[in-house]
Length: 87
Image (cartoon, rainbow, N blue to C red; front, side):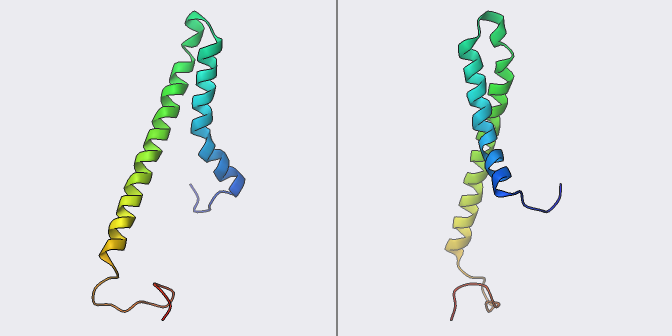
């Protein structure tokens, strides 16, 4: 995977992909009868798994950021230009 960031449209589409997959699976589950519902189950499980994983990662990143903010600036060093608040 390249180091480039996706465009805004593509990033928004990727962010909505899991909820849309879940919505599509629920729609299929509601509209089909009997054994025809079975193909929607993997999509529902995968979409839910992706959403849960994303939520867990976001929570860990935020906790790590909060921990770093509470620690304050690194001890024994001056701030380099462009870091921290202006003098």
